[in-house]
Amino acid sequence: MSKRRVTWFVLADGSRARFVTRDPQGQAYAIVEEHESPEAHMPTHELVSDRPGRVRESANAAHHGIEPRHDAHRAQKDSFVQQVASRLNAAAAAGAFDELVLYVAPRALAPLKAALDDATRGKIKGEFPKDLTKIPLAERPRHFAEIG
Image 1 (spheres, one colour):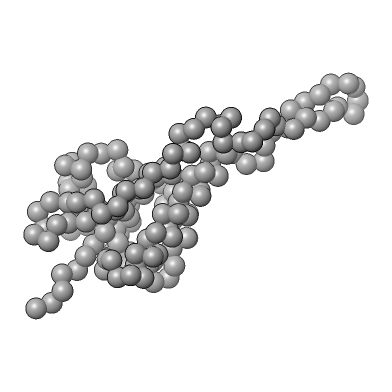
Image 2 (cartoon, one colour; image 1 turned 90 degrees about the vertical axis):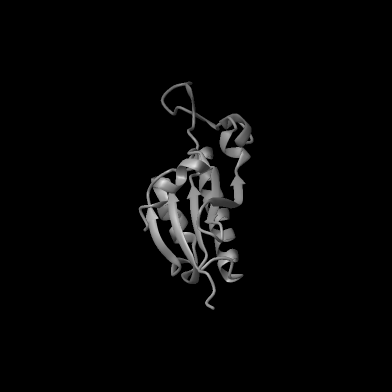
């Protein structure tokens, strides 16, 4: 008797991720893991340590604030995507799944794929630039039907 192929559906955006799989009978879906970034919903003043720097105008006595080079929320989301990729790489190395289907928000899909190692990337069966993280679990199977 052959081993049942395990498929993980990855539902992610820049602040939350859920790994979902079918139950052994193939009737329902169950959440394998959930990850959420508490920092993604924090106001900017809580993410950065101090006020922006100031510069003095050379022509007169005016002072201007300097815009930060990086958006703190964007950096936090990028960091979260890296953490999700690390978790998927570890799960793939442990043999937790055979196939991977990505339903990832369009802005996070490319960074997530880039952060996956070659072995994990080779298990990708399908990828969809969609954010399904807020859809109730009961409604997700009709979106998963795209894979077949």
